[in-house]
Amino acid sequence: MSETPADPSVQAPASQPVAPAEAPAEAAAPSPEPREKRSADVRSLLQAGAHFGHQTRRWNPQMGKHIFGQRNGIHIIDLDQTAPRLVYALEFVREIVAQGGKVLFVGTKRQASEPVRIESERSGQYFVNNRWLGGMLTNFRTVKKSIELFKDQLAILADEEKVAELSKKELSRLNRSVTKYRKSLDGIKEMSRLPDVMFVIDVSKEHIAISEARRLGIPIVAVVDTNCDPRGIDFVVPGNDDAIRAIELYCELMADACMEGAELFNERVTSEQPADGEAAPEVSTGRRVVEIRQQPQSGRRGRQAGGAHSATGRPRREAAPAEAEAEGEAPKTAAAAEAPAETPAETPAEAPAETAVEAPAEAPASETPNPEGAA
Image (cartoon, rainbow, N blue to C red; front, side, top):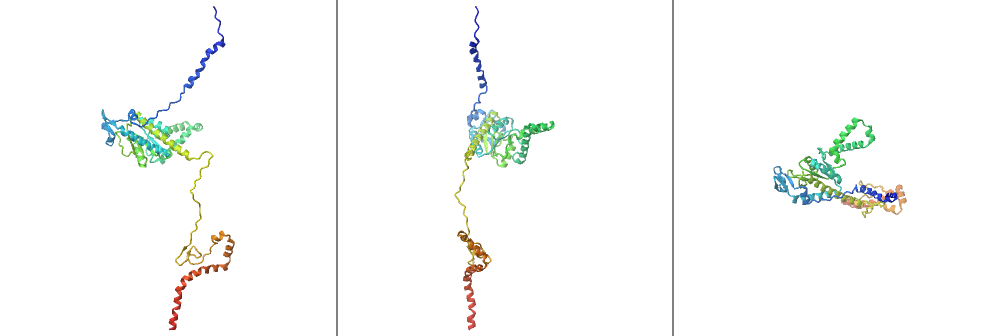
């Protein structure tokens, strides 16, 4: 018994379900889940291992007040002191960044190098994670020249035409120079001025950076372990500075504080700027400009300083008074200034003022000889 072949037009719908092959392509790129934001509380610090200090024989007595106890020869840091100190330091950094300040992350040890770079780049701050150059802050003018040279070299490598013009020897020398600069200047190549705050991991290892910041008066926020000296640190955060998880927590919290401060700064700048097409508001002080004329002051002999007579007593030729100009008497004044006959007329106007004062003093002297002559 032969079977009739199925009609191709009928089987087409059965083979069509292969079309949903596009669905896996869309599911291949899932949207990244937002990272859960951690807080600076005792629980987070405990989970990160921030309470483990160094061996008891390596402790620094200055850190004794921050030590809770010891276990198996290792000091235990008091997290009840660490948590509030960390919160206070984060609030300080947030306020500085909200005012337009910048933070420099410093951590050159192997455990701190990568977290420092990642979190500082995420928050848009500066970092030094490989090697601290002596004088990076105190001799920043010279370091800034090296930064400009480094940026010029990067621009040359980014231009294919300029790279094609270089010989193999020149290109090799340029690559070596860029590699050397990248180790120490990559994190500060956009730093045009000194930072406003320095955040340090491991005070003992970064003692040169701390001494430069102290000399320049830059506030220092540092994670201080039990083997470190907390003196000279503005914001001491007692904690483990060797565990990678603890360092990641410190850097993450510091980066979050910087980002929150940057948002506040951007909001303030945006609110102060006028909208598109809107004229900037005019600032009025409520004052009007008024011309002030100094009144003549009386002299010792009844003269008036700034009047018709100068300091030598001679009559002074003056222009027409302001009242005459206001009343439209400028032609009369010009005529009076040109006529020589009227010049003496002004002098007698002031003469009686002088004769009235000096004449009585001379009159008795002229009359005294008469009685003697009569006698």
